[in-house]
Every structure is written in structure tokens, then in C-alpha cells.
Amino acid sequence: MKRSSSGGLVYSTETGRMCPTCRQALAQCLCKAAARAVPAGDGVARVSRETKGRGGKSVTVVRGLALNPIALAALGKQLRTACGSGGTTKDGVIEVQGDHCERIINALTSSGHRAKRAGG
Image (cartoon, rainbow, N blue to C red; front, side, top):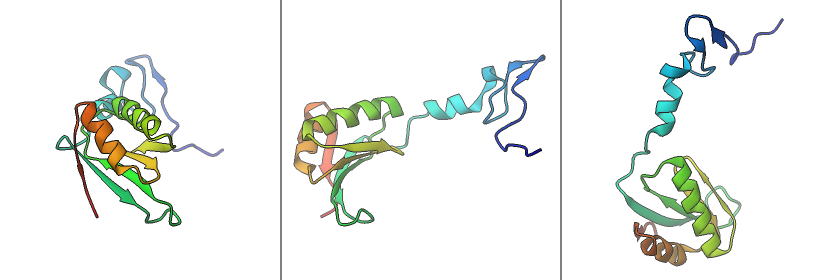
């Protein structure tokens, strides 16, 4: 029988439910603390345009915002709506399809964030 790498103890009579990732009791789970940690950033949103690795398509990238993942996703949704295009939020970076640097800088400054243009 094959054993799964994420498998293991799910419940213990001593501590109750166990986290499958860090294998600690849910009360002492290390995963929750890591998820709550705010990503490192100086509070200045750096807006740049990238085309590398995207088949020549341009993408506007926003880095440096010290927000939790939920707030970052909500801000990404607002920026994509303001630009009228698609995109994603992953690894503390907001990506908006197309070249919308000026619109994004204006939207960030109107919402109270410090923003500046990075790159060329």
C-alpha cells in the first residue's frame, strides 16, 4: 500500500485535531501564524510593466505593498476593475493584463497608498 506524503495523524486523543501540514495540534498550529504574517514591504507600491516570459504580452505588476493576502486580493480586484482587464494576485504581487501603469498609479494614490513608477 502506498503512503501519502501529506498523510499521517489526523486526530489524537491527547490533543484533538492535528494540522496535516505542520503536524501540530490545531491550537498550536504553525501554519496559521505563517498565513497571518504580513509580507515584507516598505509600504511603497512599485508599479512596472513586464513582458518577460509571457510571449511578448505586457503585464503591469504591482509590488511592495505590505498587505495581508485577503486585502491584497481585494485591492487587485479593484485595480483590475479600474483598468477593465484581467489579471491575478499571487505571491504578494498584483498582475494586471496590459499596460496600465498610469491608471494603476492614479487608483493607488486615490485609495491612500504611496505609489511610484519602477523600471523604464
